[in-house]
Amino acid sequence: MKPRVLSGMRPTGKLHLGHLHGALENWRNLQNKYDCFYFVADWHALTTDYSDPSGIKESTFEMLADWLACGVDPSKATIFVQSHIKEHAELALLLAMITPLSWLERVPTYKEMKEELRDKDLATYGFLGYPLLQTADITVYKANYVPVGEDQVPHLELGREIVRRFNYLYGETFPEPQPLLTKVPKILGTDGKKMSKSYGNAIYLSDPPSEITEKIMKMYTDPKRLRRTDPGDPDVCGIFYLHKFHSSEENVFMVNRECRTAGIGCVDCKKLLLPSLIKELAPIREKREELIRKKHELEEIIREGDKKAREVARETLEEVREKLGLN
Ligand code: TRP
Ligand code: SF4
Image 1 (cartoon, rainbow, N blue to C red):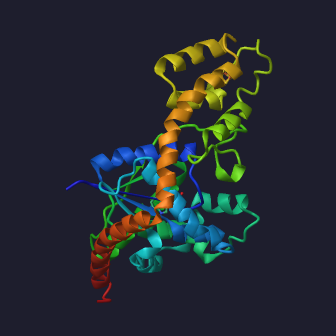
Image 2: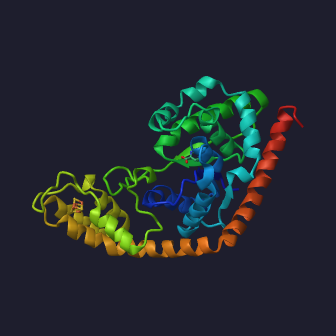
Image 3: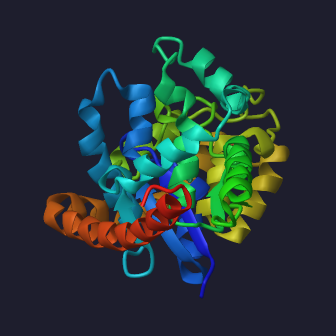
């Protein structure tokens, strides 16, 4: 039996290059080696967007289309929607009984995000419970590994503590989920900050060639390289990071050398990147468009995935209820 991997993403809209290189390529590799469960974390989206949930459904389909277009394969991985599997909620309720408030309050992302998203009122029970619900997502499938970025490690740490407490109180039930730390590559947006939908600096998997071209030609490069004759530093340049993913080894090598000596200018460097970037994104864009048009196919994939996920989740909850005297 293959070890189980579980990961989710909040449906916040169309995905961009940061998602492709930061998560989806990894998901695509993992599905060949592990028993992978990938899900749309729509309840988690509500923890921050409860005041306007109107976009969640549309975002769910957009995101699923992006996943599949990038090679996440429903014949290899179980793909489903969190809110369709009510067992997540039941387990979250039961785990809440044994989770001290202080454990939740000390998760570093809790205070940070509350500060960062100050325009939203996040003094809610649901937002505090974000990592607890995440723990239920993981344990309801008895997942062994969770591919996460550095920022999500504290959530998993908390999850492991809750698992240990559960196993101690009621007997060995859940494996302690381990992080599969993926080196999150640096993907910068057009303004030189981290690529993110909320910064409005993203290149989307749905962008047509004209838009990709426009965004790349306007994109920030090494901020210290003001004139064509100034030598640049590719290690601080978002264009160079994209070369590393989309250009041939020779071109990456050449850019790395010629940028430092002002042998190549930023405009030339961008023009060198564009054809391969556009060529690689074209089939993804076409595939996602086709999937969006054939929504019933997406719905069918989800129905299948839900069924498989539900079976596992039901079994876990039966065991849990019995251990808690609730059967
Ligand atoms: N918190 C994750 C995010 O940043 C989404 C998520 C919810 C998740 N439940 C999970 C990830 C369980 C891994 C495992 O969007
Ligand atoms: Fe970036 Fe290329 Fe300009 Fe160097 S030459 S700063 S790598 S865009």
